[in-house]
Image (cartoon, rainbow, N blue to C red; front, side, top):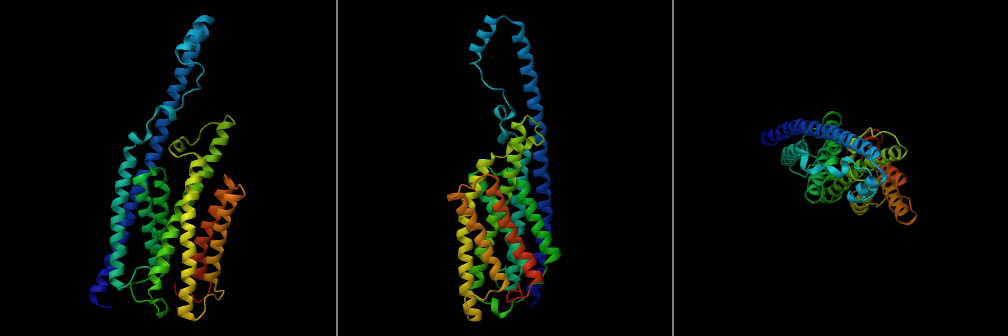
Amino acid sequence: MPPINQALGEFSERFMLLAALTYTVAFIVFTLDLVKSSKRIRAVEENLAASQEAEQMVLAGADRGTRSGSAARTGGTAGPSTADDTMDYSGQRRLARIAVVLTVVAALIHAAGVISRGLATNRVPWGNMYEFCTTGALVVVLVFLVVLIRKDLRFLGTFVVGLTLVMLCAATIGFFTPAGNVVPALQSYWLIIHVSVAVAASALFTLTFAMSVLQLVQTSRMRKLAAGGADRAPFMRLVPSALSLENLSYRINAFAFVMWTFTLMAGAIWAEEAWGRYWGWDVKEVWTFVIWVVFAGYLHARATRGWTGTRAAWLCIIGYLCIVFNFTIVNIYFSGLHSYA
């Protein structure tokens, strides 16, 4: 490898390390925001409960006519107030805004690492597991930041940045590969088409995985509250309802499924060019198809069979676990035509 390419490869590794450190700080700040918001919500609700108790004591000591007049003046029989009714979460979350800025800085550093890796290898930087993982982590963050422009998804910050850190650590510790050329089978324009769409689809499935986990947590929380239990996770007030999470996850999954379908088709065309057949029951091909079947079942069951709520969330989680299995276990422990990846 020429000295300049070697230097670029070293710069890429340093950028990745610096990006991981910045993501770590952003993760901590996102977590502190959730903790601080949780305490603030508890304090507000304690004050509301105290004021309501005092009001009830005053009403209890008054005559029936006074109570009727008071009810008329206050608008009748409105339900008890909650922190959700009185707090503007978006305006008070200074830590969340700082965390978003840190995430943007980390993404810029991360992008510099991915670009310098591509320049060092003179090709697109997703020719092996290390590059796929680092590029995929970048796409996850970029998608999250782009969506933030239109919709406040800062409640996902802890989970998205946390998953990004896991991907970067896995790439550096478990899948690290020095910058270099790829095997002849990968020296094709299909590497750009097939793998780039697979990376983007995987990034979207990562977001919906986080939403599905939050959906299950939110559903469990609301059931406990309905049964009269205490709210042990008040920071979940910052998260949309389980139904909103499910609907958003469904729309993103539908779009990602189209991309995964294209990934499967493009892979078959590339396989015909490289190996002379469209389908050969290679273990990687089989698991790519299994993932397609799981998400096709998820979309079909939710749209036509009424599989909503926790069942839909679990199907989405199972589909993402299949993606993780395909990327890790299949690539590492199963031999096949895709083993070089």
